[in-house]
Image (cartoon, rainbow, N blue to C red; front, top):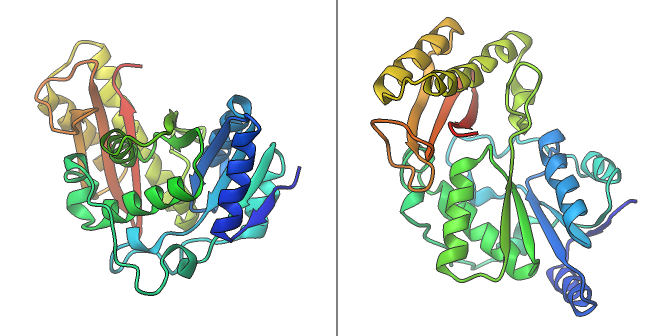
Length: 283
C-alpha cells in the first residue's frame, strides 16, 4: 500500500481527527527520513499495534549545531516512500522547513535536566531543537501512541520527560536497537563511512557489549568496566571518543557501581562521522 503524502498541517490534523472520531487507534513514527531497517522496525510495530499509521519525514534544522551535517544529511522522499509501501502505512507527513518554522517563529521548548549531560553537553541546543519539533508534531498529529528507537536513548528520555511534565495525551513506545551482523547499530549516518571505517565502527558496539558481559560475570565496578571498554576501542583504532559512560537509565547520572538500572552509552567519531550507541546492562 502506497501511503498518501501530505505536507499541509491542517490536512494532516483533519485526517487524524477523522480517524479518531471513527474510533481508530492512531500510531505515529517520527523520522528524519533516510530510512533503514531500524526505522522500518518501528513502522512494522506501529502497524501491528495500531489501526492507522503515520510516518513523519522531516530533517529538523534546529537540532543540528554549527558545523554538523545538516546540509549533507541524506534526503530521498521517493526512496523512503517506496520502503514504506511494504507496510500498512496510511500517510506520510513531509512538511518543508517554513511550514514547521514559519517566519517569525521564536518559541521553543526548554528540555528537562536529563538533556544536560552526554549529548546535551557536547551539542548545545540539540535537545531544545528535538523537544520543540516533537511537541510540534504531537500537536499537529495527536496520535494515541508514538514509536521511537532506543539507539537515540537520551532523546527518548528527553521526550518521555516532556510527555510526563506537560501531561501530553500520548503513549510512547521505545523499540530495541536494530543491528548489523557485526553488532553496529543501524544509522542513516553509517552511509558516510568508508569500507575501512565501517569495520572500525563496530568497535563501539563491541566495547559496550563487553561491558555488559563483564557485568554479567560479576564485575560491577564502573571504573574497571570502562577501562576494559577503552581497550577495545583502542584495539579498533577508535581514538576520537566523545564519551563512554555508565549511567542510571532514568537520570543519566554516572554510577560508580552498576546494577539493573544501568546503561552503557557511548559516542565516537570515525573520521568525520559521529556515531552513538547504548546497551542496557539488564537484558
